[in-house]
Image (cartoon, rainbow, N blue to C red):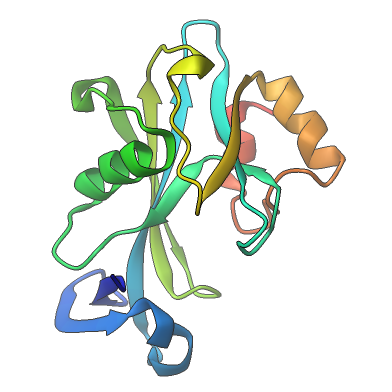
Length: 168
């Protein structure tokens, strides 16, 4: 089923319009945005849960935090919890998370809500979504920095907040 997204104005007010994901690039108007969520999950060992994108996706086989677009009618938190469940097969306790930051990105015409969650689980508990993810691991901030330096992490040029969040 094709994704449908709500459209927001430049002040993050719903416009009442929706758009199909496939039409977004060609039909989005100036000063219109959609909502994206990034979810960073940290365990008690001070490691971050990251996943590898499948070969069929943009930025193939690169590591990233979990994320995606909110569907029409979804609030940010609902979208964040859904994306983690879909991509990693885990259910987060919504009381163990917080909204870290909201970023307005003109280059992608989106608002990004960055969520940070405390969660402990074994990698064996992860259930990957074959269309989205092909691997997952717990990684220290230093390991993520190594992946970035080797070009094996999604480009963080538009995710500068990640350097602050990870302390790298």
